[in-house]
Image 1 (cartoon, helix red, strand yellow):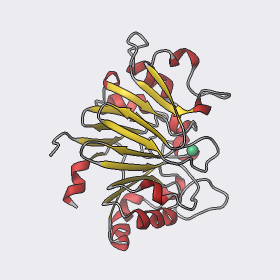
Image 2: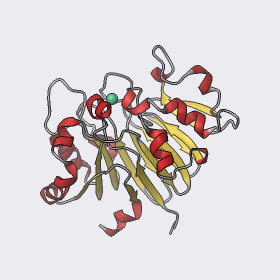
Image 3: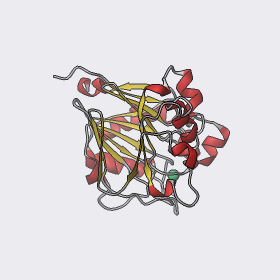
Length: 259
Ligand SMILES: [Zn+2]
């Protein structure tokens, strides 16, 4: 049995413009430590500040993954590439992002790109390798810009992360995993919104049947419902363990085995 630890640190759990602008919740993305391979996920505004505050060392990063270029996911990507590479002096790490993060309206600055050891463009059906971790981008999401969700496989665990998207047929079948992380912006579906509501997330969770689900990326409508106060009710209703991520929370994937 592999004894190395897999953890996810939530540098922020806020999503979308108004939560971010008012910093109702932090918006720094997540720091994955998968058996010692450290990966930064969606470095939104405040990522660097919170990473340092929580003792995460950017120079230990092996890679930075960007699901899409909206600012609540990407605002700190340049400063994090710079921090990972010690101001560009130590060329290292891989930056994974959709092609449109480098094209017209690029969010990753040309001079910073050269600091990374490698740039990999994400695409539908893509498979990527970083140390002992493999991850896939099984399907392009329905969102305003090119967006992907992820399935990660480590020697000990499998994780799916459903990022921003409108609900579409077949979405859930791409994300079977023991741990599901899902971005839930609003409480109830509001048309037209290319984001998931809690009602839709529940539908997806029922299909996937993960052993544990972590809800994150809360917009104002979800924040108002205080997800951290209703998680037990949701878990009882679903008959499955559902946890609302908190700013700064570390989830240890060994928890999955204790469910
Ligand atoms: Zn978005």
